[in-house]
Amino acid sequence: MPATDLPPVRACIFDMDRLLINTEDIYKQSAYNVLTRHGRPPIPWSIKAQLMGVPGSRNGNIFHEWAQLPIPNEQYAREQEIE
Image 1 (spheres, one colour):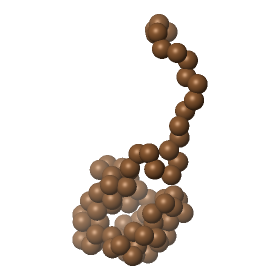
Image 2 (cartoon, rainbow, N blue to C red):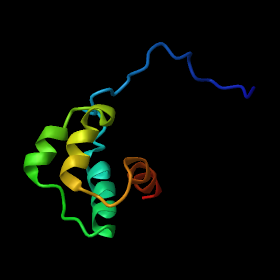
Image 3 (cartoon, rainbow, N blue to C red):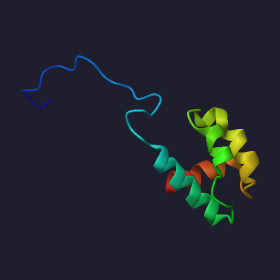
Image 4 (cartoon, rainbow, N blue to C red):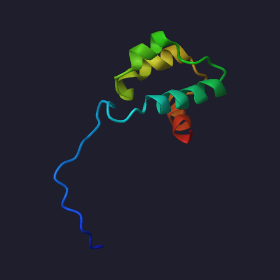
């Protein structure tokens, strides 16, 4: 184990609600890329407002019902990871 002069870790911050790190732009761009690839429009504000602040596992139905993508939800998830 490498020697360091750093003090031991006393605390950690978990950004569970994404207030410290803004990942919204990354998620938005990733979804936009997949939607565009399959000929679908960008997510409208009315749908985006329903998705914000809700974990993906709980808001997936809202998104997929709106998007009407010609691929299974699992493939959408894989294509998002590629971006």
